[in-house]
Length: 241
Length: 241
Ligand code: SF4
Ligand code: SF4
Image 1 (cartoon, chains in turn yellow, blue):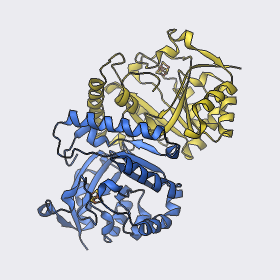
Image 2 (tube, each protein chain N blue to C red):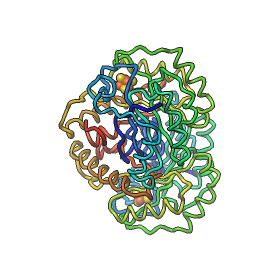
Image 3 (cartoon, rainbow over the protein chains, first blue to last red):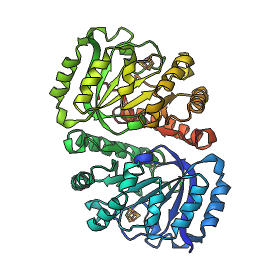
Image 4 (spheres, rainbow over the protein chains, first blue to last red):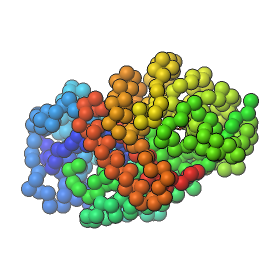
């Protein structure tokens, strides 16, 4: 079965979460079961990117990675949308592993796939109230339970993007519930259309300062990590970097 | 034996390296066997902070940590200067561990101490040519050899601060030599006296962009991670934050 791909780009660096700063190539799949109010990849599901979707086989994707130059990266990030909608990613993941590539993948935690057991850096990113989405805790519980051993081996982390105090309360609930899973707080970007990169970076740093202040004063976040989105600090709202 | 302490501050977040974004309290010790040209803590060794040095017992330090509030952090970073000059840190480290605190420590890798085997997040940060210092490779080899098991267990990383292309070549040499040790590249701050935080952040982000560009195009850095100094992005050249 083919995979709906919106873009393959890189190498660049992973801008957030557990492998922040690592050189990686992104494969962005189309389709999402959510419609977050602040989604920075809405073109993957709102129809605006429809004409850019390529239906690709796993081998075609690998051919594209080879064209980029396999010698120049050893990490691939599968991103969306929600790539966990795609059962057929299993074949691609197997081939990437045979090529000795390390694989990162991000999903909001709504759909289980057996291939998650083969992801090296799996980021589960449940969405806080500001997204307008409701968390399905039974699905999330189930997913994290199935990943218990992967958590122990350092392959899984949780990340919550924060826009406001309500989001922070939500994050606290998630972190407390799944206290054994490494936990990251990430600063949300409210200005998805701002074209002035300098101004955007300043706003994001102010927001990071706010978030750091909250975490510093809250014992329930002693074990959390607070990070910016480096790509937004560096390249603003540009796509494909 | 007492410990020469220059400042104890926090909780704040760790701004760089392997535990970037983690809530921590800093204990900064006085004294260094180096004099790096761009040292951002020169007051620890150049005489300018002499009157601020307090000679403290391990218990006195712990009393100060308790005053900060042990319930509000679970990570302590011992920084310098070069804390590895102080054999007597062993006692403090033992007490911190009994208190269930996780301990980070940064050193340039010139002096071995047995207590290094008890550090949870040990950052060895050899200094590149721009510092004006010479690396003693036999000392560094010895240190990393003695830490082999700690490396395997994820307690050790290497970090090189980068100012220019020569530094990058040096970093490559270090990374290649110790390829099993997780490796971080950090953007150096050239403007230690700049008071305009916004302008400084912009300069640091430009520098990060430059460094990311270099790493992206260099297969020898496939496994390195590139990070900013978050504290400099957030708070400029202020001390004690
Ligand atoms: S889950 Fe992710 S891709 Fe889907 S709408 Fe939300 S932010 Fe966008
Ligand atoms: S080793 Fe560290 S503290 Fe010592 S002079 Fe160099 S930068 Fe400063």
